[in-house]
Image (cartoon, rainbow, N blue to C red):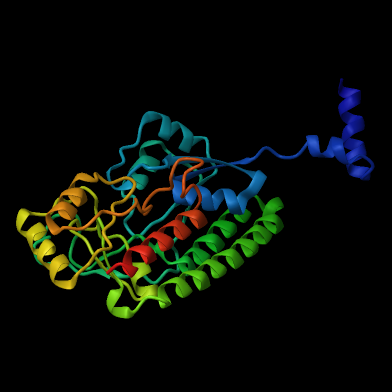
Length: 307
């Protein structure tokens, strides 16, 4: 057996046998991503060189996530932890500390210019603090260009032999993101500015709103565990009726009852689910970041055309 292994290694070194060399390829780099959207980005950039574990899975809410012992085990066994940052997953640092994680951590949003969520009247202490950064930076595809490059650099540091592959994958994906942004601009540009108004279940679209000049109104704060008061809901209903807003949407990981009741009271129909903080399950309409964005833009544009 030892003689066989020595022969295979010698063949690899001599470049005489490609298939035996492939069998000696390094094991995939174990990576943990904090939530499903980041998991997708890591898989795109890492390709076959990485093995990705996602802590907060499809259709799950990272705002209220509570790590399990199995999550700590996965983290201990990984070489890289990828988090969004901007206060999106405050539990991640606690998990890393409790698991005595020794690997590297990359903040995917590093370099993004954060948008500030000024505290709104009536929302004090209900999900966000005054002047808190909005963590949902991935809602602008051009921010995800930075995410992609940060992930590629972190993977190259963890696995220098794969640096060229990671860079090539990242460059190809950046082109797809730029194409996505150009397409989204065209979809919204066709809608008059005074019709670009949308009601959503929580305030998670600031980056998309800024990129494409859309006005979003939400009865919930930035965190999905924040509940609006009856007075706030009544004010929103009056605004919907006054401004003739028909674009009303819920999110895939939100409780739809609030928006359903809001739509009933305001006399509007709630549109299809949007995917904001999580991908859909495999085979769903938003099982990758690119599909998520195309689904959301398509649904939002269709809703706003009815305003």
